[in-house]
Length: 419
Image 1: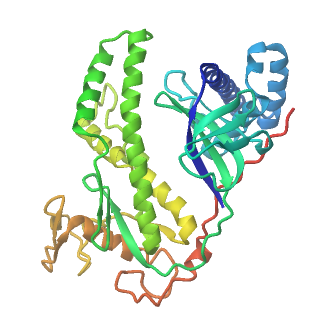
Image 2 (image 1 turned 135 degrees about the vertical axis):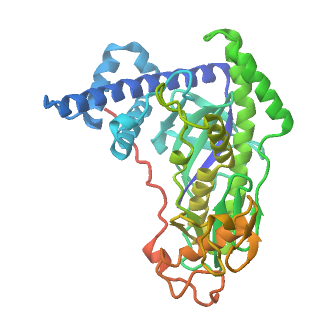
Image 3 (image 1 turned 180 degrees about the horizontal axis):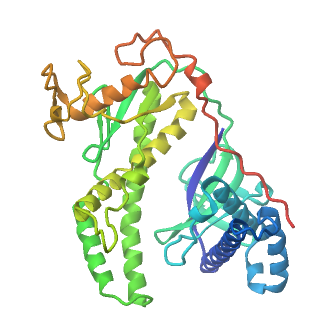
C-alpha cells in the first residue's frame, strides 16, 4: 500500500537557495505551459485548429528551451517534466480554464523528484537522518518517524518558513477484508467539528486567544504597509507562522479523529457536502451587491476553520488500513427530520443544539439526531444485509460493501523518462 511520510528538512543556506530557485523555475514552466494550453483551446474553439498541445509536445519544447535558456538548466530535468505531467493531469481532470496560474506571492514552492533510483535515505541516529537528492546533495532531516517502506518518490515543499520533504513509500501492508465493527453516521458542523450517531462529540480549538489577537494585529499592520516592501514581507512571514501552527493542529485533529472512527466502525457515513459551493462569497456585482455579505463571510470562515474536507480526506486515507467503508449520502433535511418518527419540520430544531420534534415531542441533541439520520440514510446508498442503522445486529456484517466500493491506494507515481 502506498503511503506518505513527511519530515522537516534542515538545509544549509546554499541548499535553501537552490530549492527556492528550483521552485521558481517550476512555477515559470507551469505558467508558460498553462498559457500555451489555454491558447490552443481558444484556437480550437474558434475553428483554427492546430497541433494538440499535450504533455509530449510540451516536453519536447522544454528540451529545446533548455538548450537556449541557461536559467532553466538550474533545476533537474525530471522535476520540470514532472511539473508538465502534473499540469497535464490537472487539465484533464478539471479543465484547462479551471486550472490556475501560480502567482509568486501566493504559491508556496513545491517540486517532486519522481525517480526513486536517484533518492537515498539514511538514518544517522534516533533523531536525525539524511536524504540525497539530485543537485542538492545530502540534506539533513528530522527523523520524526520510521520510513517504513521503499521510497517511490520525494516531494520538497516550503511552508511557514521551513522546508519539508514528503516520501511516497510502499509499506507492504494490505487492507483487511472484514471489519468487525458497527456502522456510524457523522454530522459535520460549525460549532462541533464532528458528531457521531452514538453520541460522541469530536472537537478542539485550533487557535489560542493570543494567536487570534496577534493575527488580527498583523492583519491591521499589513493593511498599512506598501506592497513589495521588506516590512510587508516580514509581516506576511509572521502571519504564515501563526497560520501554519493552526493548520498543523487541524491536520492532527482530523487524523486523530479519522483513526478512532475507522478502527472502531466498519462503515462511516458522511453527508455529501459541496464545501466549495457552501463557502462561496455572497458578494455580488455593483448592480446587485448581495445580501448579508458579512454574515456569510463569518459562516464561511467557521466552515473552513473546522476542516470538513480535510476530515473526509483523512477518513479515506485511514480506511485503507482498517477495511472501513466510507459512504456519502444526500444531506437534504437530515437536520430537520426526527429520527424516531421521520417527521420533517424546520421548527423542530429549536436552536443549534436542541431538537424537539413537533409531532412526537422526541428530544435529542440536534447534531446527534442529524448523525443518526445520516447513518440510516446509508441503508439506501449501500447494498447490505438489512438496514445500516445503529439498531442492526452486529452479526449482519455488510460483507458486500467492500466489493462494491473498494478502497484502492493512490495511483503510483512512475518515473518520467529523460529527454
